[in-house]
Length: 151
Image (cartoon, rainbow, N blue to C red; front, side, top):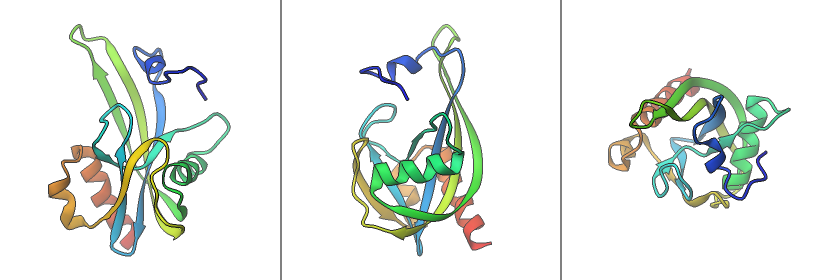
């Protein structure tokens, strides 16, 4: 875990990718999103999640991040997909590089509240996706997670 005052700054122009874990949490026919409180994409709705820490599995990271960001306990975690997020500057150099491991899980307990990394939380339905202005990959992951959870 980074102890720097500005962890995002240490991720610029990296010499390796960083592993992020996001989770589509379902409660019945609703899925959970957070409103991002930090860059990148501050103020936008996104999947809750964060960086995998040394020594934890992807599934442990997903459950920990959901608890930290939303105060929820989750169960039945499964892999949805892996997304590469590589952003280059005007000179073509890699500015940021994240390997995003997206999971699907079921709400098990708790009331959703925004943690320190989020400005808000909300439950949404698939019909809301067109109005949320989500990154195209987030839309795809949510839809794919719905297919996975329904078998």
